Image 1 (cartoon, rainbow, N blue to C red):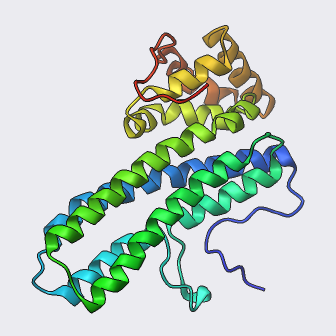
Image 2: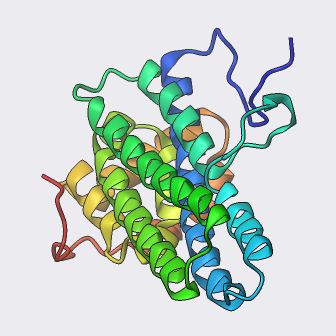
Length: 247
């Protein structure tokens, strides 16, 4: 039977450490994708919402938001998942393979994001009957984008225990190091450096040893040597973010 999900699935016999590693990496990729979609919505919607062609404008708005979360599931075989759909799916895989306590934190953040999307969806349905002034539409979309950004940043905070659980996984560590500038920009804070400093309080030597051992054991010593300089560029003495809630 064909899967309903048009995104990568994991073998049923995959060991928990491998499942945790893959699901966390895929989740982080969709996490970044969600931010990109929000940025696109912020850029495109004000250009096209003019209050001149209500039905056309609502159709455009629905199409843009569907990139984040599916609005129609009448025929799931014909649908493509939005980034939030995928994020929820990979987090479900992560939670199943993880031994982290307090897993409800991740679920609560995802539920918050979903509820914000559904609330806007409900308003769009009412707009089809009576289209409001474009200023009201734009205000609602701007509010939604702010809520999504806030929720995504809180979601990253909720992932901290899972990064801690994967602190000896060279693939997760390399992803964080390689993408740290992108992630820090999205989070508006050097969260990756803060995270690495918490995971490896003794400093970069510990992180370097884990990466070297992991890649060498798998026969990728050349890969490690080629990218080792990325570790040297990490700043280990960073101050707390103004809005940081990590404990």
